Image (tube, rainbow, N blue to C red; front, side, top):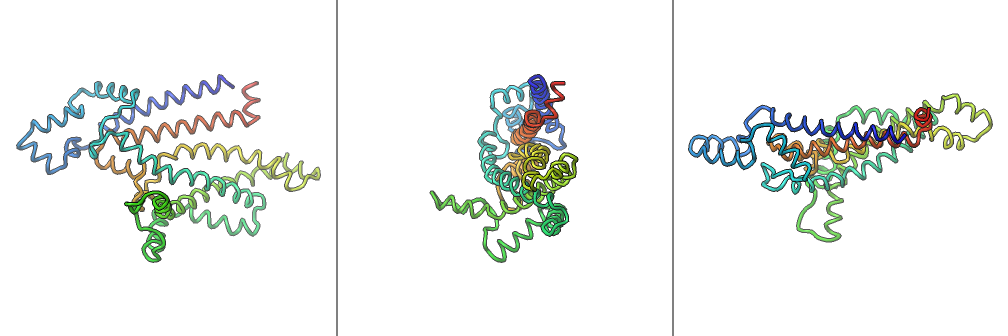
Length: 328
């Protein structure tokens, strides 16, 4: 098993290196002039006509005059030293630009991950244990409907109703400003209530369908039927046999979802003006802010690869079938 885990770690590191390389060249080969996006279209043509040396200075400042392979080697060195340069648009260091966005994204994604995972597991178990029952007949159509409706539609509708019409929550933003202490915390919670609710609902419905399907499948297995025929109570059959096996694919899914904790929900963050990673990545791509876009992409990719690796390790540890395969 140790050899298997080590192999997967090496594969994960190789994947991350490939992602780093692809992100670097993909950003450089995008259409358009970097300098034009950097200084603005009108300013670019003005400088090109009257002060071309200023454009050369800006290009040299950001290393755009170097050959591509030199830029690539510098990029690898910057990653190794955690020096990602300066943002083209904010004139701050990339870390100072991205880290605050990570904080705001985690403020939404961590409660979504925990609450959605727990609610999805509990509700999915109830529906899957008694398929066709009253709860399943009500909950499954609701979950299917929410899963098929784009989150931007739900977000805009709730924004118009709850924020604009009823004025229960702010229309956009993360805080009202000029507040400190407990007032600031309550104000942030007030601003995040609606986007957090939307994210939890979508996550719960997705996890609900997965857990229901897993429980429904396991309860029809031979060993479950045999356990019930031996006179075990429904509770013992559920927790000793059904849950232990149904949780394996669910745990795998939860580990995979951890990879998206820092990538943010671009649509929801954009609708509610939540300055997290999703909105930052969208703005940096539109503004041709290569350093910021590359770091956002790199963080998201590393999280996804790490989540895949964690999923493999967890399943290898808790799934007896994997242990038997390794030992055999």
